[in-house]
Structures are given as C-alpha cells and as structure tokens.
Image (tube, rainbow, N blue to C red; front, side):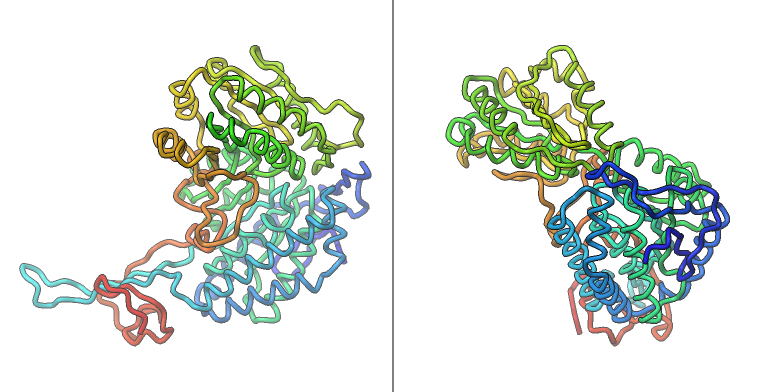
Length: 525
C-alpha cells in the first residue's frame, strides 16, 4: 500500500536520485520501504499543478469544500489499523497515542468542514453607498476574506498525524480554498503517504481539481527550500525548531514577492510557582509536573521546560519532591536517534553551565533511544546573565530558577523570549495581590494558564497556539482552532461592483444566509 513515491496531485512519481528509509526507534532498525525524494522537475510540476488547481478551487462553494473535508476524514478512518501500525513503526509512539492523534486529526477536519459549510467565517462586511452625502458621495464598499493561493505545509516530527499531512495547517488551508503541497517529514514518510492517499481519494470522489493536494518526499532541507522560493507558492506553514523556521522565514522574505511563513517554533513554557501555592500545594504540584515534564518523553511544544519561584525552604521542598517523583517515571522512547542525539547534546550543554546544579537524573539502564529525564536548578542572577539557559531542550527536561525576591522574579519574566504558554500556580488571593506578575507574563506568551499544566492543546475556537517570537513568527495568529484559517486568506474589497458579479457572500440578497456586518450592524438575513 506504500509505494515510497511522491504524489503530484493524483499521480505517483519517483524520478529523483535520492532515496531514504524511515526508522523504527523502538527496534533501533530501519524500516523496509524505500522512499524517493522529489526532484527539481517534480517540484516544478507540483507547484504548477497547484497553481492551476487554485483557479478552480478558490471558486468552489463552502458546501462542496465541506464535503471534501468530511470525505478526507472518512477515507483516513478507512485506512484503519494499517495506518496505526505504520505510525508506531515510524515514531516509537504507542498505539494509544496513535489513536488519540488520529482522533484529533479527524476532529480538526470535521470542525473546518462545519465552519465552511455554514460560511460566516469569511467576515463579509458591507457598507452601502450614500449618494447624496456631502461634501462627497460615499461609495458602496464590500469586503470578504479571500484565499492566498498554493500553500506549502511542512510535516512536524513530533505529531505524524495531527500536525502533519492532514493536520491543522492542511485542513485550515484547504478550508480557506488554498491548494496544499505537503513537504513530508522524512521520519514518518510512510504515515504521510498513507494519509496522502486518503486525501487524493477524497479529492477524486468529491470532484476537486487535480493538484488541490500533493505530497513530496524529502530526506533533507533542499525540497523545502525550493518550494518556499517558488514564485507560485503564496504561504508556508511550519512546525519545528527555531533554526528551521527561521531559515524558511528568511528565505520567504528574500523573495522578489515576500510571502508569509507561519512557523510555530521553540518554547520553554515558563511556570511561575508562587510562594503560598508552593506552601499549600507544593507536593501536589511536584507530582503533577513530574508527569507533565515526562509526558511523551517531553516531545511536546508545550513541555514545561522552566519553573520559576522565589528561593526559600518551601521552594527547596518542592524541588526535592519533584526530583524524587520524576525519577520514578519510566523513560519512554523518543522519536528518532537524531532527536535523542540532539536532546543529549542540549541537555549536556545546559547542565554543564557554571552555576547549574543537577537535582534529578535518571541513571538506570534504559532501552535504546529512550530519553532519561533531568531536573536542574539555577540561581536567578545566573539565569539572567547566561542566555544559553534560556533555550529549549526538546525532551524530558526542566529547569527551576530560584529568584532572590519578587523583583528578580519579574526581571526574569521580562527577559524571557516569546513563549507559546505561561502558567501561574497561585492561590486566588495571591494572584490578586500580584497582578504585575500576571501582566508581565501575559506580555511574553500566547496562552496563559492558571493552576494547571501547559501540556494539552484543546482544539476549539478560544485556543491560541502561537506567541511572540520565537514561539511563532506572527503572534497575531493561532495554529490551532477555527481561527487558524485566517493565516491562509487576505481581505479584498469590492467598490461599486454590480450585484450579480459579486461573490455570493456579498450579494444584496444574501443567498447563503450567512452572518454579515452591514452598515455596522450584524445581520443574517
């Protein structure tokens, strides 16, 4: 069922000279199937096909796009256990995680299907003319969100389903009316091809134009770079490292026509442990965070990699309990030897910095490619002076910063880079008395959490998954939830346009019966 070839629209192709295999980190062996990286000619053919498809796809009704998205979901479910087996073989993640992630992917597709079927997401705005207005007449103006064009989506290493081939970026872009070219992640190319086959089958079943979706294999960075530089690519979605996202962002902005790159990148997701909360619930929070830090071997973008508190005996007790509890957790398999190799190098670099103390280090023997969790501590002054300590260590790792007082705690927060999340652990009265801490943290994050853990990203309209750089390249947008569709559109206004030539969403009769803002009043009829 897996060919190892590229999907150029509905055509399987393997003209390139570069081949590779995926890897099973649990067995520490290569998987059998050989994949062929897309050649320059195949990339060119793919983008041109997507550009032609856009001319038709942008005009397709919300109802038909909804049918397409729902059919994708059905075809993915029809892949059944085989998809789950390939997922586990290429990631080292267990079957329960595979089922959960598949469920999230299906939910996202159906969520966008419902959104575009209803239709009001286009934010239709109408300001009717006032011909006798003085001193000059007011024209008739109508505005709508319009798709950008072909979008390149980069598959994520840590989410082979939910953030990859048919994940949030792809489902949002297709819903917006943009053809999608996926640059498949080499760590789970088989999973990507299987999901791609489902999307292609759904496109054919629902009459979508050929080229509305393509999937290109790549063993390295070249295919992605060529795609981003292509003049007919109009936007990019990326989930990964700061280094990788920054390269794509710079390439996109060096083009003759720069394009947006919506990259979700690094985050240490700071957690502020307030003194009263530490005193009253410190042991409980230590247990909770031992689980959160090690969840999925720490391979989540929302892993709590930094805990900040005010130095006293209570904080020391929290650190001790956290250290004791975290080494009780059995290490789990990481995604790939390259992932665990980077984890070990980064962990070693940070742990060896002057003034760093290791409080917990899992030292028992573990199977190959399993990540050993570590907790370190550092003084607030040392943290402020050494920016190496501010960087993400992707894996089961967290640092506790012990500040001298509240003033230094605020200084630490204000010197953090942009983050996806920030958490405050505090009693309610303690929170009310320290609003300056809340406000400082709010300036650095996209989602702020009270008395919880950052791991776990709910897919719903109120979720903000993005934050100030380097958490993401544009903090105004989310990568999760229905509002993520706004990344793939631009507003366009029609002035004094004949009613019969307007998009249905803007016509006087409102044939789609959507909610519209008409002369500053919301109307749906």
